[in-house]
Length: 310
Length: 297
Image (cartoon, rainbow over all chains, first blue to last red; front, side):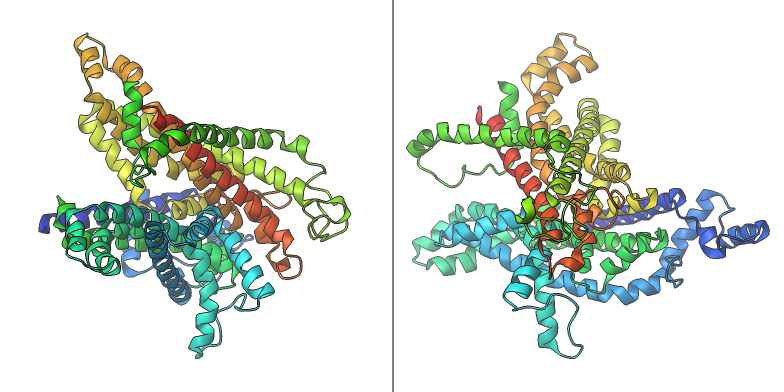
């Protein structure tokens, strides 16, 4: 077990280095010029040379990458061309709303996935409709779900607000503002998760211990709850980790529809002005989150079920 | 036929296997199922045809105002309405569909080609080559694909070709994994062993005895994947990483007209529906291809 955990941590470190290396290489080839961004278009040759030296751009690439990595470890992600503030500070400011939205969408996805999986096995009357809705929902682009949700729930029905984060200090209002974006973001992962959960439920349902539980007269609901769901959670857990990658990208889109002031809105403002440090910073933070969460999921799974670490 | 058997084993979680449908009912439905599968797979060809013919099918110039601004669907002879400056939404969406679909097919083709080559090389050669290629593949697979693609396009500069390049860069590892697994399974089969004993060289074994066996599952994987590429492309386009302003594009057209949502809902919704239709067609068609290629056992 210890070996497995150590190996997984080693892989995690390699992944983080690779991710940062990729972003570093991309920064070199990016169309935005950091020197011009710093000194402006009309600077003299001397000023440009000085700025290049200040930024360390006259040093060999390996040295530059070393500086870049050392900076990352200190939490230094460079300076945004647009806001002129350290990217780290910007991300610290815009990150929490994004985190909140992703967490809420995750809960939505879990609940819907469970409904999907259990309903397709129990065959209740609404199951067909529910599954069809999820199927189409998962094929829809995230932004279409978001604007469709606004048209239906805000414009036509008037049940939910169409954007913003709600009045600060009013938890009910904030929860209402959170519901629609979380739903838009959670539907596609819910289907992927529900499918995995369903097939692992079916496998577990065919297992001997479930037959024993039924044979001794345990009700269907109690059997599901106590003998099936727990044993089926493993594959769903790793799928949940993978779906996080989808959500971290999808949240960027959803935020822009709902004027949710998080990393997605920050990114969308950075893209048109070629603010590469900001874009790379957001990618790095979200990418690292994804990689770390998946490592944690793997370790958790190995702890819960030692067979997976073999 | 033997090669098709293994492809069935490689595509996991076939629906219908575990649902316990009565055997007699299955036989009766087999014929209908097969026709449905052909129809579904034909959908892929149909959409490709529409994409190719889009400039001919579009009733108006997608770039020029042709009617009153913001006409609702149906008004003034515009089936899907017009946008804020009076351009025909049907024509714009058709052209957007063309771009999205052809780019998605290209991404999948590049993924098949690059991933297939890597997977075939890794699986056929084994040893340290396999180890090295698969570590690189795993590395890419462990990174969040869409986020990496966003960073790549942002660095290269927005544009259709750069978006295509970025998505292709993160898309091939998936195919490499599948093809490699398939090749490893095939390499242990008697016909490959027989070929080796008969003195066939490595290249001949890879191309004549391993490659054909990999094709069905690779094609199934690819066709089920088109919908995903469509959605990823649409997301990047929505974030402003696709073509620049006047060109019709499914994601970008929605993003640019979001402010219209509450007054003229159809202007941002119609391009989004185009992307939904494409991804649904991709999913249904992919399911059809899978049914056709994995049925024969």
